[in-house]
Image 1: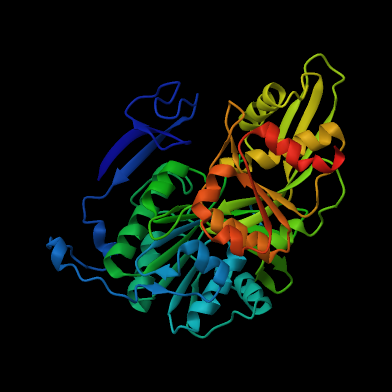
Image 2: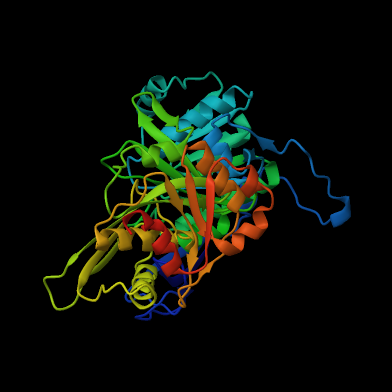
Length: 459
């Protein structure tokens, strides 16, 4: 046997032959841990089911049209880009108890209806516990095999006998191989086990789902090690005090990134939310200052969400700035633009911003709605409850054009709003749609012009 000692960063997976205080890859202090890896001399690629690779011309590669398998869970299929791709590796991440195992068992039941043979590797729970959950979800199927095992070498022997179409490993941090002497959950073990399952998927066409633990800050444990290996990374997000869950794609080699799926946790499992905009606006209070509705895009899906602002006199020498769901630096920039370009004195005011429903908005199209909410709260003048606002705000106070305006306007019409305030430059791209639309579409060029139109009823 060959023994190799190396120091591996627990944050990013960087490896070095000697210990150093600060990781040169992720700049984290005291994150390198010594690991002794013992490699066997025998061929350890026996797990690849004896499928040998060979070079072939790219033009001779045959692409099958039935590579995707729909799960009939429409929200999950939407996030995956149309269904599960054969030979793909999908990583599920999320906080404990948020519903990862529940959703995967529902996926098992859905794929069984497509006559797919499934092997569920329950590395953290007993077979009895898994069956109790499956009975509650009505997911008990004849060809759904379950094995409670953490040794990957033994698991591959089971795979050779069963030859499933889908493998679910719950979770990857618990699996280990005898070829690595470090403990399960270490960077070496996670990297090796995930790598072997990935090679298995690519050579055999078996779809693999991996469940990944998260760290205290909400990111996947060993994120760079896992995210670089797999094809798709899905994060389960949600608040503990609500029943709603958001499934977000942050990486997808077979579809669009930043897509989201909305689910509701019920006693019978995760239920799809057919109209997410209704969910985010259900508890909105009308005729309240500091509330604005924005039409934002999550991948290819338009969503209407509420942005709330609270402006109050500060009790300290330095005013506070807080933001939830919007980047704090972006919020500070918008406050500065509002002070300079719209003559709104906020230097002695505390400003708090919040996106209702736990949604995180990363696109700049929410700028104008955030500015309107702050301005409304400062003036104590509520916005019209029938208005939807979107547009990017520049440092010069100009309103810049955004993408996919037609999809946003169609969502606004569907939700019953009466007026849209948007960048004037986008009116050219609408063409005849602005005349055919049942709602009033107003284009604005500057922040001051937008504020005058929004609060014109008080003038």
